[in-house]
Length: 181
Image (tube, rainbow, N blue to C red; front, top):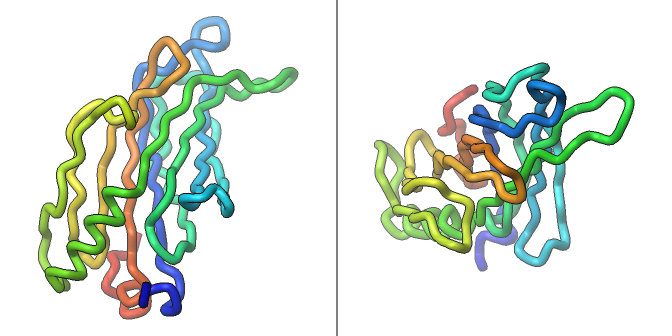
């Protein structure tokens, strides 16, 4: 693990939008997303959340959250809630994304010594162990290993969440290779 002593990379989580979310108020909901990033042993959990979108079942957040990590390992958990002023917020489902495909693609990028251009590194298929609704590709471009994912919300009658996960290694983060957002 020669990477361990080199500092932290950046994990960027972009919550882009939701689709067909569940109704939790009379005819709509006021959704927001809580994002939890945990290492593979659940010892370090970092949490943040999006803003509330009022009266919307197809919200657009386009919010980017940045977390510092040594390696892209562990699980990202997304919890969707309906904001309520006078009572507890209602659950609107949850989804997760394992960072293992991003970690494997990062190792492949290092082995191939990719530094420029855009390359598909790995295909990730939906299965019983993830919340993916369709095939996703882990790509390398502009100093970032990234995956765009369409996630099915669990423990709810309907709902999808669209996210992008980007990993920027410590050497890329310090040389300015990543795109400014």
